[in-house]
Length: 257
Image 1 (tube, rainbow, N blue to C red):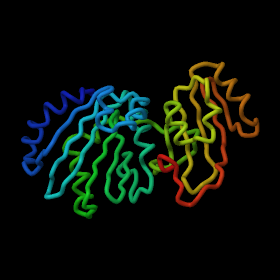
Image 2: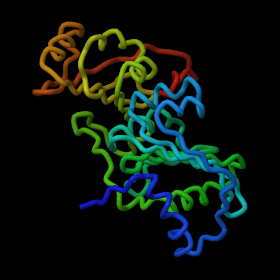
Image 3: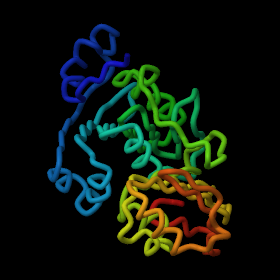
Image 4: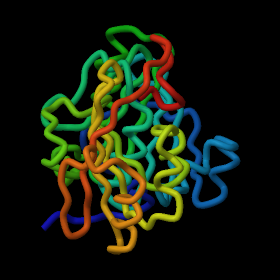
């Protein structure tokens, strides 16, 4: 059984962990901790989205590792689904995605990962090849990536890896309005536990898997969409297809979808 350690306790153990692995070249310049509404002090209005996914704690560090500067953020979320969800809204234009069976997205100046119930972001201003390699090493100094249990992407979506940049998980009205604004009214006053959205940004046809809390909500959705758009249904879900309207080539929406 996988052990679940509070992220605060984990960071208390880090000095011993780092010393045991002889990582004296890691220099922490600044460290800050945010919980609950204090997150507004870190990101202002952007905190609302993280709170919708139930963020429990953020530990952010400015560090120097192998002569490269990094900002390393670790968000502890309630579940692997929430960690993947908030991660999925921030991943697009990945230069490399989902390596070694992990959810990860490497872009020009950032490496992001969804690991267990944690969303990880490492920003490296230099953008060098050396920094990109060191960013991956830095994550593994703090998190035992291979010992975490990640969320399972629903088979109904019929999507193959890599999932990053292709599959998004929406938890509430704010994430829906940003990632799927054209259908936001369809989900008003509907009790859903989560919405899976699949389809690359350059592909107009999407698959949407809606997971419900009650049968009444399933009936509301059925009344609001064309029957021909329903691919399949289950006791607590409905799978629909959606064709996205054409937009400007560089218009990826608020979260790059």
